[in-house]
Structure formats: structure tokens, C-alpha cells
Image (spheres, rainbow, N blue to C red):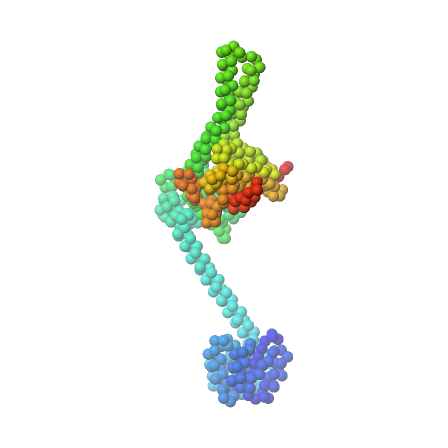
Length: 504
């Protein structure tokens, strides 16, 4: 307590000397010989406790007390009346004027030291308590605001929100959740989450909730629920275990229409693939037709020798093998297969190019490959290739729309190892880039800058879901300025970082 400052207010030098000798070793002392001087010191300097005489000229101690209490800046400073007036009436009046204590003269050294120390400690505790109460009040305000914010989100969110107990019984839910499944409040309170899940998804749902108990949270899980009228509703859910460890918070988004658009997008991709098949088969079929008709004509005119026959048959077999190989390539894309397999990035890129090459050539686009790195990743082959094709199609559309000169239409595909665990693939073009106000929305469902006859705004959303959410790849898009073939170019760059499979 030796840093505490005490102000002694007394018009008698002898009294000041006595008090100062008692307290000097333990406190910093300030002296005022009248009330006016005391108030001036209090306005300008820090004081922790005041020892105040009552009988003083000009302004007595009671008047000083009243001025002290009426001043917001200094009214918190405790003061003790230290006076020769010791009858009960004066003591009562002293406390009525706001004093924390009343010491009558003469007093002992021990009494003064003890009371000063007590009130300094009490004042310190009072300040600490006030700060604690103030902090608690601020925390209460924060909690109340958070509660209001949560209630607002809960009640007005377009996503369905529900709170479940450990038995997956509904404890609460918002209007959006009710509307999503078409139940009434009373009906839903009698249901469990599993009862609303289609039979084939129930076991997986149990496993998901068990996983949430262990990990505390899970995101972007797709499942199928049944509405009141038996309609299948595709939902994407995120589930959190609440802090009490006894309840689950479930946020559900109806993605039924999104699923429909994804299927539409896939059908559109299939249409493009069929077009690519036609382009890639045209030349081999022409060669087969020419060889077959030439062989037949030579036979009819009796000029067919063994060498010509063998040459034409070998050519037909070669081109037929090529057609068979392309059938396998297109089948892996067109027929959904969610089996995970280990496959190299280079192979995925090469098979993607086979499928999309005709579209690149038909739009007079120069494809530049720079595959400096290769690594094995664990993935669903068809889904990864589908994602790559969506990105490449986006680049093709941008190049065709914005770049008039065929000589300036470039598409770049690169790959390189970032470290032993990460491989990065980039797909970028010279199409001029993406507007800043569009860039942040490019993966949003239904968002598209194209005419509705060209795009649904679902292709890149599907890509994000397949790469980022399902395969845990880091997908970013940004504008890239670069030089190629002595030309300054700019375009959209899609960066894909994937976890590699460790060599055993």
C-alpha cells in the first residue's frame, strides 16, 4: 500500500505534523491548510484518501465534503473526518455528510494507522468490485445481444435450423425447417430426425451423429429426408454438438432443386461429350471407310494383292482400336462411379484433354501444357475429370466471348509439387479475367454472367462441391497477368491444390 496518496486537510500546523509523522513512512502525503487549497489539489492530482478537519476558516470540513460529493470527478475519493468534535451529534453529522469514518482527537498512532489502512483496503475492494460488476454488466449485454442475434438468425434464416436431444428428438426448430418438410409444430415434436430420414440413409445418419459426438462438428453432409406427404427432399446438413454435450444444432439446406440442376448440368456435359465423340470419330471412321471401300473396289477389279489387303486391314484394325479406346475414355466420364482409386494428376489431365480436345480445336484455342510435377491422389476419377472439364469449359466460353483473334486464344494447364504432401494444378486462360464484383460469387449456386440459354450457373458450383467439399482440395480463383510468346496476357486462373497419397 506504500504507493497510496493521502491528503491531509487541517489549518493547524501541529496537527499536520502529528499525522504526517504517523503516516509518512507508509504513504505519499499531500498537505492542504484550508478547504479551498484542498479542492484545488483534488482537481489536479491523484488522491486515494482524505483526512479532513471539520473546524477550518472560510470553508469548514462539512462544506468541503458537500463540494467533494457534488463533483463527479472526485466524489469517489473516500474521506475521514479527523476532528476534536467528538460528541454524538457531530459524529452523526459527519457520517451524514458522506464520511467513511470519524476519528476524534486525540487519537492513538495505532488507531489512525489501522483505520487508514482499513479504508484504503475497503476502497480498493470497492473499486475492484465495481470493475467486476461493470465487466459483468458488459458481458451480460454481449450475451443478450448474442442471444438476440441467434434468435433472429434462428427465426428468420432461410435455412432450416433444428435443435435435437441425444436421442435425436426435436427440441426446437425454425419456420424454414417446418416448411422444408411440410410438418406442423405438433407433428414434428413427435418425430425424431431418423424417422424423417429415408430408410437407406438411416444407418449412415446414426454414424454421422456418432462422429459429431466425437469430433464436435461435421459439415456439408448430404442426405435424403421424407416430407409429410412422402416426397423425397435432398438436404445438405451441418451438425454441431452444443456446449452442454447433450444437444445437437442442425442446419439444413434444401438442395433438391440444386440436385436437379446438377443433373441438368451433367446432361449438358454429356451432350458436349457426344459432340466431342462425333468430332473425334469423324477422321478414324473416314479412314476405315476409305480403306474398306478401296479394298472392295480393288477386289472387284481383280487388282487386290496381298500387300494392299494387309495394309488396309492393319489400318482398319488400328483405327478400330483407337475408337474402342475413346469409348472407354468417354464411358468413365458418362457413367457415374463414386469408387475411390489412386490415380496420378498427369493421367487425369491427359484423360480430360482427350474428352475436351475437340471443343478446344473447334474454337481455335491453343492448348499449352506445362506438367512439371506429378503425384498420386485418391479420388473418384469421373468426378475429378468432370470438375476439370467444367473449369475448362468456363475458359473456352470466356475466350470465345471476349477474344476475337484466334491467335490470342490460349488455354494453359500446369502442374507442380508444392511439397511432399501437396500438388498444385492450374487452369488459366487469356480471356481477360473476371470482374471483381463477380469473382467472389463465381461458386455460388445459380450465379452466372452468361445468357440463360448458355449456362445455368451450376457448373462451377458443382466443381466447388466435388473438389473442395468432397475431395478436400483447396480451390481458388483469381486474375492472372502473364507473358507468353512475347504477348502480355490476362485471364482467370483456377488453382487446385490436392493432398497426395504417400508412397508406402
